[in-house]
Image (cartoon, rainbow, N blue to C red):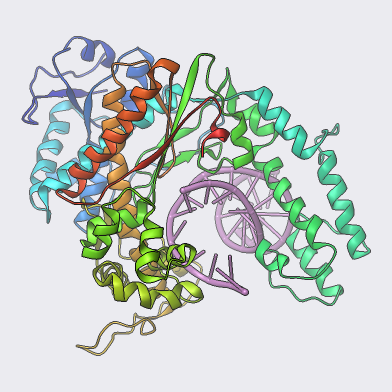
Length: 549
DNA sequence: AGTTTCGGCGCC
DNA sequence: AAAGGGCGCCGAAACT
């Protein structure tokens, strides 16, 4: 378990530590504020378990992933051992397979470790990575990115240790209200059984509402053709089974995903402990392993309750994605509306949609997501007239994605040419891969030239630059907020894309609220440089998560 | 019997 | 009215 101290200049300042207890090593060098190590997820939980916190770190393997991506070498093994092999010219070892998380296990604590490198080798990789930062398009931003993501990994490890305060009693009460009594044998609870009976009665025969094929067949026998049993499609039908069916599906979902067995598996000692993983996705958004922590249904949030005398500070970034688009595109009009803290969609609609906020919101999100039909597309033209640079920015990204070129976030996180949008998976599924059709040279890009897969890549890339740059910003936000909370009892306990929860004693709550505001503005300046764009948060100080907003 | 994919839906 | 991005999770269905 090798780690080395870094001086203020980013250079190793020995002596270095080869083995033994890393906690002792860190304790022995209190003047060191930054450590370099192979993997935060393997080192830092052990440090925390020993009561040791570090201010900053540099994660070699995480930086390797980001640098390989930036260099357009996405498929290559990203372990420190692989990086060293590339540096020294030896055979490159493949990455070890990933392992799924078990409920309630602090997985990375006592598991077999990946290949360890002697510290001198690790530092050779580190030095090489520093050189590779210099070779990127924006070295300062790339340095900020690897630093920010390392900081995010510290935050994630600390959140994993803290856990989200969770009242099992409240959770059980909510489940009982929604689902009714449980029956022995683990079958459906009362309310679901009743709804299933109503569905069957409406069809005149036994129908299992949880089986899409059965439901489609039942509608066909009733003379109604449906392509799927998605809710929006069902709700357009005129049939007595629709209402209980939709209600069943909603409750069924809660039962299977956040019901009694979930509670049994994931909540212990008043805490829900998912495993947060910073940088788990191509876009830089976080993921969680186990427990569906980023998909807690609104009704279940009733169970997130602060400890006695403590509060939850729930903070939600206001219209994050269009504000980020303003900052990265530097569209004058969009920067102007994003320079105010007031509702951005309302401002956009005042300018381009005669005050219809919903239309403006649909148009903006449609532009960011690459909507191909419907009202969003219709309103895209109005958006393009008023905010031409902003729309051009995402259009350019989409075209680059279609053509297989690299696309980057503001700080330099790079979208692989065929990631996510299905080129690989489509290929594995046997879908023919037609070449992206080229628009005639000199013509302006229009949708429709490209193949289906290329268009999917385009939508991915379009969204990537916004969603990913937003993730860049939130990493710096978290880092700043973590630092602000360092001297207090306050703990970060939850993070979900544009929303953060801090658990703190009641008397610290107002300080935390202010800290969030300051961290957001600092993160904006650090990430995007001088920009008029503001990044306001809605904050609520509550005892129960469900009472926020 | 064990593993992978699919359909659907939760959150942003 | 109904479609675009990301992710995880579940049971069933479809495989090997």
